[in-house]
Image 1: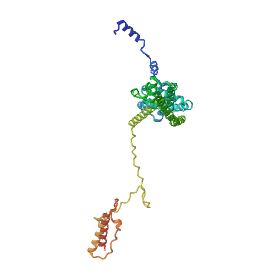
Image 2: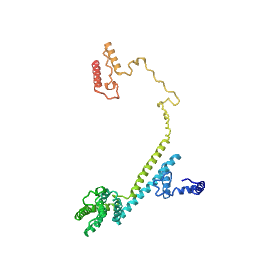
Image 3: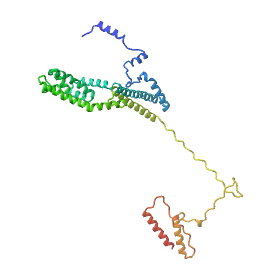
Image 4: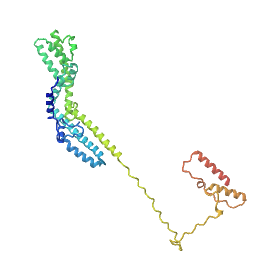
Length: 371
């Protein structure tokens, strides 16, 4: 449908009157219009009831970590925001557990009956699965038994079921519409005795299941819920639990980003080089004629006869002395031999079997030459 020029101009004039808030305060207030709990709000939108908690967490984190720049301070703000929301979620989870415990003590049957009514509302659309879910609780079995009692009223008056009552019986049994036409009893043409038999059979089965199994389980579940361990938590509890899991992930990611930024901006201090200590002054020997200003006496130079080409090699020096004494034929006393343990070079490495045998062989040769 086309719009005239006059109507278009009128629409434009009307649109100028509803452009939304223009001031910053008005924009900030309008952002809170669709805010319910604020646990999933992003872009720095803090719920009003969490403003003080975020400020407190932020101050605590700044005092603990001391951010070095604006980026680290911003990351700490994100950590503080997630921490405040996480605390609020944990508080709400505890409140939900307390509420479920109180309701289990005061109105357990009413709440479970209402839950059975909500499940039974889907019975006409999906009779098979819905009837099975109703038979999972004692309250659902009571709901089914109440419908069987209503179907028993016309049978007690010797009146068979009509088409509507046959459909209800089939729904309570979990029989779908595709199988009702072929069922021999769930139709108005079935005999009166067959309808009474099928009603008694299914009603007795539901009653036995409720009394023998479901009612003891229901009592146990109620007691656990009163103690704070709900086996069937509410939808609100599950929603808050999902928010708490998401906020814990956000908190860990923000804290990890802050630690990474702090590690990247950390500069290791330069190592301090220590100067070697000054050498201590050596005192001169206390002789009667010396003083601090006197020059030290020069050490006597070794005589040419005392020098030996085998200096530092005790084994070779000992062999040379033995050869020289044997060549001269003199009966001078043998030179003092150095102990073998001090004559052989010492090694820091462990001695294996081969090295030990070589050392023993060399010692035997030396003893043979010396003898």
